[in-house]
Every structure is written in C-alpha cells, then in structure tokens.
Image (cartoon, rainbow, N blue to C red):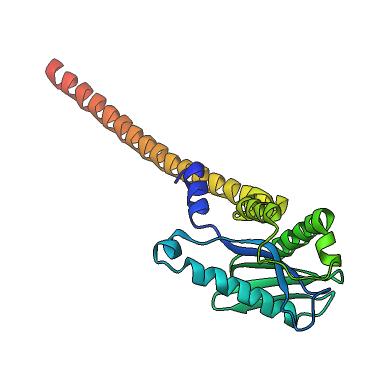
Length: 221
C-alpha cells in the first residue's frame, strides 16, 4: 500500500469528536440549571437518517449540565461512559468547557482544545459570565460556529498537533524503509539466482569445449 493510500485509510478510520460545549455555572438565578451558552454537537449521518439526531443532541446537553454541576471550580476531569469520553474543565470564572470524544482520542489534545476554546469564549463573550440571567441553549450563534470549526479542524489530531505529525512521519518513514529493505532482499535473491545460473552456464560451456576438443582429437587419429 502506498503512503498516500495509507493516509487516506487513516482519515477513514480516524478518531472522532462528538461535542464541544461551553456551560455557565455561576451568576444564575436561584434553582437554575447550568446554562448551555454555546457549542456544537456533531451528529453522524447514520444517526441523522435513523431519526435520532434530536435524542443525541438532548443527551449531549443533559450530560453537559450533569457534569457541570458535579465538577468543582478549578477542577479538571476525564470521565468514560458507554465507549465515549467526556473531558471537563471548570474555571473559577464560572465557565465550564466540555468535550465529548471516542475512547481513542488523545487526552492531551482534548484538554488543549477545551482550554483554547474557553480562552476564545472569555475573550469575546466574557460579559455573559458576569451577568445574572438565563439564556437559550446554544444561544450565542457566533460562538457555535467557532465550536464547529474547531471540531472540524481537530477531528484528525495528526493534522494540527506537532507531536502527532512527528509520530505519523516516523511511522511513514519506517514503512518506506521496510518496503525498501524487502525489495532489496527480493532483488538480492534474484541476483543470486542469476549468478547461480551464470555459473551453471559457465560449467556447461567448459564441458562443451572439453567434449569438442576430444572429438577433434578422435577425428585426427
């Protein structure tokens, strides 16, 4: 398999991000659930055609609120459930970032995504964290688009993470060297066969010459 084909195969089998959500946990009216300020839920096409897209979106919102209530300020947590992983970061500003992925996604990259996204949110929409009130789920549409773009960008972490890029390059280099060595071994074997055949031809040639010389001697006599 060529290197290009292997890259296409990796794209096909790559790990997946399912949701990136920003939750407000402070400055809320009494007895109010944590607020989903912005985010994006990536609905697989298989779920869409099965008519379960709404249920998946509601489940993502439910778990985001649930974990936002359970985690303490300043805490970082990773929770695995039903072949999914939920990464959570809670800041003292009252903002909690949540990323849901499959079990193969790298934890280091997942937490980096959350941190970077939270930085962007606080920089552009920090006023929502200071005002007391309730908001419609995913009400900050501009930041919903940022969450979607972030998830699209990081679906394959090897595209953006330098360490993952190095790992992929090393793997590709190893595969190229292995293929080269195999071809060299195969070629060496063919050369040995050719040398052996040439040796046999030389022996047959010498034998023919000896027989020819004997035949000439017999003719003279």
